[in-house]
Image 1 (cartoon, helix red, strand yellow):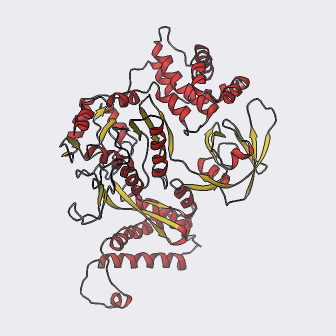
Image 2 (cartoon, rainbow, N blue to C red):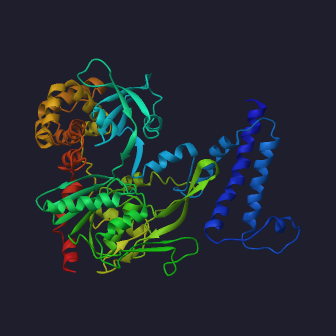
Image 3 (cartoon, rainbow, N blue to C red):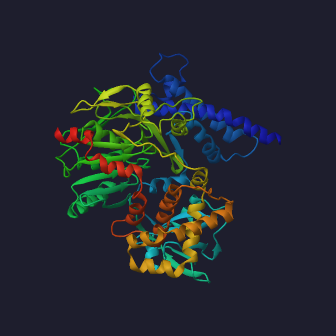
Length: 569
């Protein structure tokens, strides 16, 4: 290693130590505000004041950066240095405080925005190729004729495949300013030559309610992917549409919903809770329940007073937990599934010089009964792997283990209207627990833990173009489901699994294995064939939920003792 390289590496801990002071500076800025000036700092002796150490630390930071910039032996790219060091700083605070580089900020903000400018497709990277999963209705790509299942193999006459492709590089290439042009080379099943399209980038609506449909004659189902800028409006429209179709009770599916905007969750709960019901309250540094940072309450009588069941799982986090916690604590509905993720920290996004941003944890949120659902985090603790440890300890498969974990890890609280016992300290514990189904053969486990089903769904569509085209033209995904749920499709998959991985079922493989594999495979095929309809991604979710255990338990929950108690209130 060169001496200059050694010096640069030696500087990083110094700068990191200096940047650690920023946390205290921001704490002062957004908690208690302190007054100081340059003259007072120059005095050799003065009376100590609150926050003085923070001010001194800030001056240290300024001094070190100044000397590195002006006097270091080699030219230093200070922006690059800061961008490398800041993520290390934020990681030492809590799991959700984050530094966002300027070039990543727009993509990060777009994730929750109601719209952005682009070509209007949802994609997956598969075998180093961009596969179009869905063409967004009314978007630029739909207007020129792109289809679900198309492969983008060239962009602006340059090859766009290979191992260097990432989701971020694809997004940066396909999104851009309004009315700019991008040329796409498309590979389509059944067509030998590359098809060229020129797409004019335009505004693309970003839908966050993935699907809604009638689960049975009286039950409306709504799947919410995340809480974005306009999720409350999408949610409201879905509820009203389902009411006109006969819904007299509702399932709200928040599984794998990682959260989003807290006020949007509040807007959605406004449609369901009684006026004056507490939705959530937050406490920052030095604040208490009696003197919180903010209290969010329902502002109107409910637009929907029908029974509610909320589905959650171990990946339901943040705003999802606010939603589920408010429904549970206000005795408004029944929560079904397994314990949620456990994110009870509130972030504020603060602009930083140079176009970057700091997403800083400024408070904890509490459910109406007073529960903080934030799970433990700390030094030398694998926070992200905590949900995996639940499985290892039996919590994901056994209701007694789940209740024991909840009681050991948290305090007991009482709901606001019926005084039912609920738990805090590590996610929302459901009223009705649904264990993971782990009774699988070795062959089933190998298949479901691999990418074979996903890969085969693309291969099948490519190999059966006329059949797939007929399904598309019919638009009847129910008939497509019945035709694809067939032993011939399964046998074709078994041949593929043997060829690719030498995975072969045992001679006495149970029928349940075929059912598990076909559930996922047919759902992927239906998504590739039918995409979305007037109820958004109804075809995929309708197919996938048919044999989903948690979904079935949600339907049963409407006649459960827990729901009976709530309805009799």
